[in-house]
Length: 158
Image (tube, rainbow, N blue to C red; front, side, top):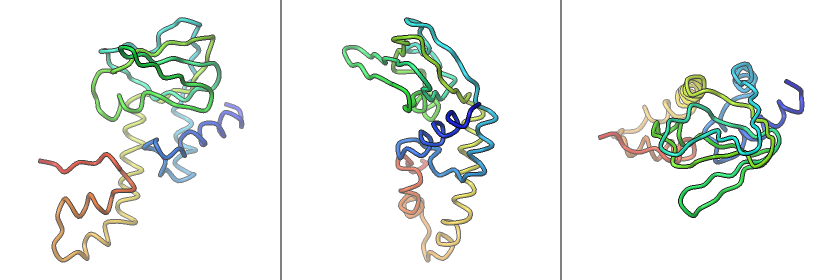
């Protein structure tokens, strides 16, 4: 992996829409060891609708188009996809196809979940847990308010 690849992955991970954005530099460095490079030929499908997706993709070169019914989204170098499938643990809602010969850095589902849970536990224990303990009446709603910037899609357990 080149320094350019490392910089690209760090840039993508720092995007506010990516759940891994809170990783510290040391954890980001460790994450790189688990990423594998995959090549895709023009027209090759890398994710199929209604099938499980096992990877978080960072586009290194080339481009991809995601289609669902009449909707289309294009991914180019410096963008990512697949995270929603990994977070929801549901089958993909999109078919994603390479529109030219392309390359991605990929993180598999298990490594992604491990890194995310490790990152979250560090963030929670160092920043939010002391504040939460000081609360006179801790509730799940208060916890979710505290974590709002950390996990914007968090929901209250039932």
